[in-house]
Amino acid sequence: MSSVGPSAISAATTRGVAVKIGVIDIGTNSCHLLVADIGRQGKITVLDTDKIPLRLGRHLGVQGELSAEGIASTKVAVARMQEICRGYRAEVKAVATHAVRSAVNQHELIQAVQDSCGVLIEPIDGIEEARLIFLGMRFGLSLAQRSCLGIDIGGGSTEIICGTDNSIDYATSLKLGAVTMSMRFLSDEPTAYEIVELREFITTELESNIVSHSQLEFTTAIVSSGTGKALAAIDYYLRSGKTLKDENGYVLAHADLMRIMAQMEALRTPAAIKQAFALDLARAEIILAGGLILKKISKWFKIREWKISTCCLREGIVVDTYEHCSDHYDTRWQGVQAVCQKFKCDQRQARRVLNFALNVLQNLPRRILPDTEITQLRELLSAAAWLHEVGKVIGHERYHRHSYYIILHSALLGFNQREKEIIARVARHHRKSPPDKIAHLSQTDNAIIRLLAAILRIAVAGFRRRRNTFLGVKISDQGILTFVFYYTDKNFPAVEMFNLRNEQKHVEETLRTAVSFAMQRRERN
Image 1 (cartoon, helix red, strand yellow):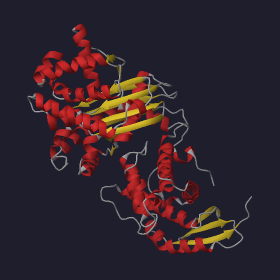
Image 2 (cartoon, helix red, strand yellow):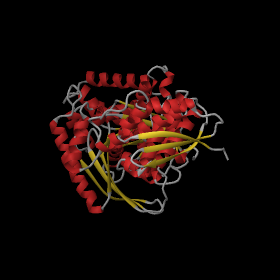
Image 3 (cartoon, rainbow, N blue to C red):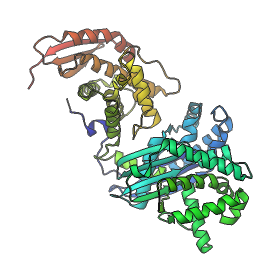
Image 4 (tube, rainbow, N blue to C red):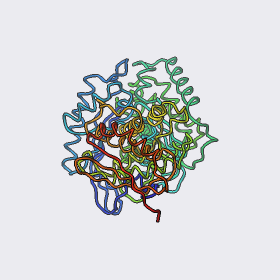
């Protein structure tokens, strides 16, 4: 059996194949498209862009549900962008951020879009969003080898991340967005009192949820998103009376940010802000809230100057796609290890179970496997196997349920929400009851959960005594799926066989085929 490590959990393939990718980013304020070509040497060329002002944040009801109008407009936007991607023969990857991930009926939107045009929207959590934005920022400004603080103020959330290259020291996502804060605190003609309330709320959120300046080390501070670009354009306009052609790399001093915000807070209304700073009305309506967020963050981290990046989430996904197809992609593995260490898992047992689970997967007949790439199955199984015991930090009884909760709510960098749910459910159903059908997941995803839960159930039962008993497994398929385990002990592994037979009914139910287990002794080489 192969040993576990970054290669066991990465989707490593051979570099050297040119790829075209169309990234659809469904945000709280707008839906963006970026079509890019990833060349054979890793050169990324932007082929096309598009933007549709969806304003999904305004389509969220009081109970957190997306309106029918919001879902319908998203369907139209994604279909339009998909047609653009088809023109380039680009593979489509659609992600959704704060508005969709916080919607109680997000699965209605995902299903509606998939049914209408075949595009699968994958919500990503705030920490994964921060990581991808950071990749995009660094790419856009060519900041390899430099320690950076990155800030992205979106429509529904603000992402903060600090690190060097692919090494991330700190990441968080705050529910502070230019759209949501404007809707919550500012009327059409904001009063001084409303602005004070918003400032106080921002301060409370920062003080409660992020670390201090002294706890982070960085040499460069970057801000992206519409707020950052708009503030750069305002600064340039006030200095020159001209329109800024390209915000990327523009340097906005802290003192200039304070000056702009003092003027903006005095102007208050979107109409006055639009006229004074030569903004379009859509941006003028939300720039005050976005600017107040950046103003407080700038003071909090004692920033002298901000460097503007026009590259963020979409470019980060393109970079991530390229790195995912390289031999050095280990972000996922690092994230899984970090969670394992945080909850003090038995890593020796995790390694045994993971290696054996991968060995079982590798030997399964094709008829048992769902219609998906084997690389994806390896990644998801590896994460679930490594983390299946994290729930024991809460207690042994029902630890599989605790594992489910911890995995689902942990910052597993590199995994989107859908993948995290699959991993969590595989860990949840490696013991006790087999998985039921999850209505909001696709037929393929349900099949993946059933398969991987059965494999993990077999692997855990096979190492019940928490020792290196087995060398490997051979699987024959003659109507009955027969697993022959090769053991090394002098004595027959009766405990393992007892547990495997106890699990036989559940494995058969999950795999939907008859199975049998046998043991065969082999000398260790």
